[in-house]
Length: 391
Ligand SMILES: *Cc1c(COP(=O)(O)O)cnc(C)c1O
Image (cartoon, rainbow, N blue to C red; front, side, top):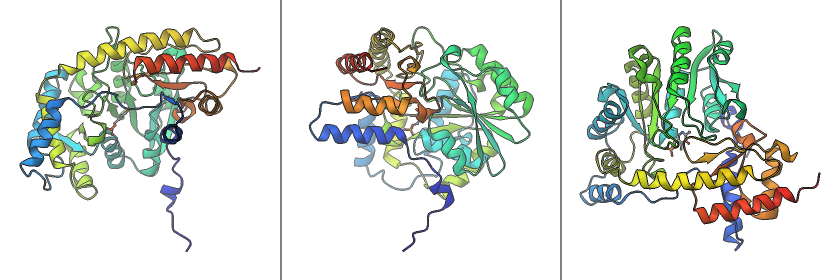
């Protein structure tokens, strides 16, 4: 049979991150000593009290459908978190729990963008944003940045890219893949442009808690009611609580957008997993003592990796201020990113994600969500690989 594949699916680029990851895993399974820098998830286990809350819920029979946008207890706990940590007032009806932060992003884009619309996305970008925009029938417009500006777009750059078709601006700070963090002043200046031009902001704040060297996170929504009115915050439990496999994220939006997403979700996933939501309540209301420990460990790895990368000829790396990624510039090696990563994996058995996947072909993404011993071993091999390149 000539199997039907819709244009919207046929035009999707498969995730290069997952492709590298599966190749590395296959090599590992075949007994090869692969060092993986591809991970987009913490290497720590979910804290015990969170697992216990979900296990208790399961044992107590909390196994049925829940309200589509999440259990009231969790929506309230999220509203409380936004008040406590971000100084933001949201009604629980403006909070929607979804099946992962990725699903929250997809809901926002699907509910607000359509054919003819443009979505402004700074590059290097999280690779799912442009694909989601295309799935919604809209057009991604990429705003290019480099390491010279610490991968940050300027208000002028944003203003110049806005057209009457612009619908949404995607802001992700701290950033995946670069680890870059905008200062509060920079965030506010971008928010001002969006307010001036009537543009909605999708602010992906999933790395909010992973900050280094005194960097601070301030949500664009928190500069005042007008900013909040122009913003949808996307967040989730994957990173700060290491709950990637639980598939739980959330968003906080102006009322009409929340209402549209509630309807959309009720016809697609129905609701996020019942007992996982009980774990998420524990994540927000229980002890946060794991976080300083994780941050200290990430910070140690980041320092080591940053210094080591900069000692390799042909490679330069700005230090990140958040998340768990470094984004070294490899242009001095003479190789483009896909070629670099394919040869690195082949010759030295080190898996890294090529920057081209994030719209930046002169870079690699190195995740330090892996042990310091792995980082040392992997970067020694990367060093050897680069020094052995024939020019
Ligand atoms: C990890 C991540 C998410 C959400 O991941 P989920 O596992 O779907 O919760 C969203 N945005 C960025 C930039 C991420 O790196």
